[in-house]
Length: 399
Image 1 (cartoon, rainbow, N blue to C red):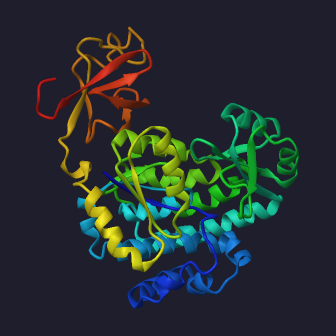
Image 2: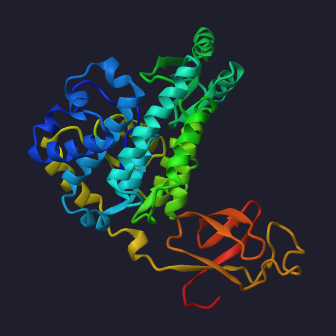
Image 3: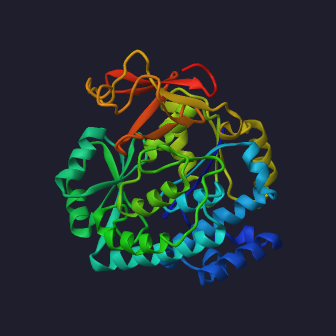
């Protein structure tokens, strides 16, 4: 199964777009997205120095536009992608590009959103001097305890051996003087404590704009940074992207979901290398054979297309049978409450929704009372801690 991932802020390097912009079609498409964003992104992707592209207002639109145009180079006919893709995911701002690739929003909507996201986050960061530091290695519990002890937030949990601490510069300096044992600290090239409460003003601004954005349900699985869930509802995808501005990125859980889905190949859009590097370490630790491809140059496009053919398959969302979720005839209860069935909340055999895959994390809304509960689909059952409450049957089959 093939997953395409989009990098987040901090992956950019000076001049990374130079070889891509030598391609006329790429340059024309990139110019269009630059116009939509009202930023000369071609300049920043070729001539600007490290300090200039560190600016959040520049870095975020630059990264999203790069992913969007490269994806069109990889799949000149976008509909072809959906016969090969199993899922898409993006790290932090990369989620906007991933949502566009899944057809939740348009490229133009993406560029306006990311422009405003970058501006709002830069403004929020300017209110208080803040930053982020990668913590490499060390015992996970010790690392998380040290982060909490210094009043920091584990803003990115990227998998084994890599957690990113975020907070004020004063807090980060104290953390550096009290580093966890066997851990290396590396300050990141970002301008603020992203994915922490420091970004709350940015959430409010972007949320206001997002209310005017029309969305569609994803054409392929969208794996959310919030908790690794696969999201099938377009409005929820957009809501999570907005809220994620001030919430930690759980890339470790995204990787866990990829493993659950049976990923065999991951291809990263440019500037590539960060996410594929994390994936290699993660899947090596799980003793899984997963190939990765860091797409960094147009010279690699033919090889990347071969990689997609090798690992691609018809999307499970498009081809898997739909399964019906019903309350288990064996245990007609809800939330461990034996009185629920008697109260008419959910009776045995009641159909409460459909799911397209047996591996998706889904949200189930009760038709009685509007309660929302998240369940994990495992081996044909919707499992809650301690007991199976719901079962799956093929649509049209016996309940």
